[in-house]
Image (cartoon, rainbow, N blue to C red; front, side, top):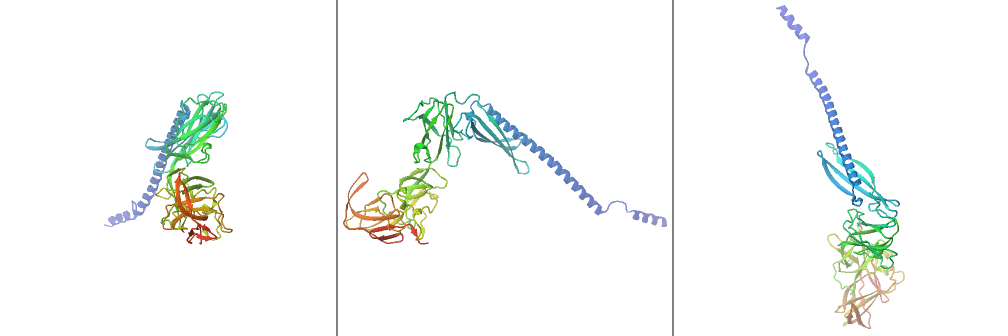
Length: 460
């Protein structure tokens, strides 16, 4: 019995096996080691996948450059973007091609200067790294020379570049090139076909005899910004410019040409936009942008203009010869000038372009009068009116009841009323009354010494 007790006590004292704490610690250590191994394997796989993706991207870039090098028409190598999928990975392939002349700067079409020597082709391949969402890319550049000279000896090249308002190329523009009518200076008719502009807005005339040539654009619904030499400052749907071609040189004809913005110019009083008024027989509206004026356009008619992103400032009349019509030209001693562009032009959802004018109620000189003339006159001293260099007369017809609600550009006027004798070719002949019409004073309307001041300024 004692022997059995001793044996049992010895077994308990030896305490063979593992405790629960030891098991938990062992499992934790094993999990950490396993996680580290897994991360190492994942990183290896990611790096291997990234290396394969980079190899594929390099191959795509090399293929594109090889294609450019073997192209029989280097003019057809232009800017392009494509999407490809290889081994489950989506790649974006962007190609940029720029002509580099022997002299001058590189650009999409080639600048004026020496002959077009070669094209710089740049490839950018981008893709998204699998599993991590990071975009990676590689770039590759190469110079590609044409197989033969672009232009034969002793002849020249005309480069035509057509840009949209955002600077991108205008594709599909028709181009005609002909010897200058007044002074060709040796120019000869170009017999080879001139293609429409490509995706970068470029087209070319090769092997051109030295001389002066007129370059003209056509594309339905497009208009230029008025900077082409043949446009003479006016925006036109068929812009033109004259270039001089010299022996073994490249001449450039550059245009800004884009889809026209359609607008409907209107006269509107900023303070009484819903009040009906009688307009004059001629209601011109000019569109101002920086230092340039376009128009004038007849109020209520449809006009097409170049789609500048920052819009235009609509002004009634002809601000170049009459400063009064533009509220920004008035001094602000009496307050703040009415903003000539209260909203973006044209207004959202419409084609309306509103030029600010002043509504004024006038009592005619005689009960039988049915017409009124308002002529700009020299402003009173210290009135703040900048005045008009050339007097302007506005004529109103179809009036009745001896009272008329009319609208006029800002400025200083004298009024006369009378009876219409005849209207021929838009010219109104009147028999004037002996009396003087009177204007009803109101906000922006004041009278003094027979003059009526229509003031855009309002007290703040």
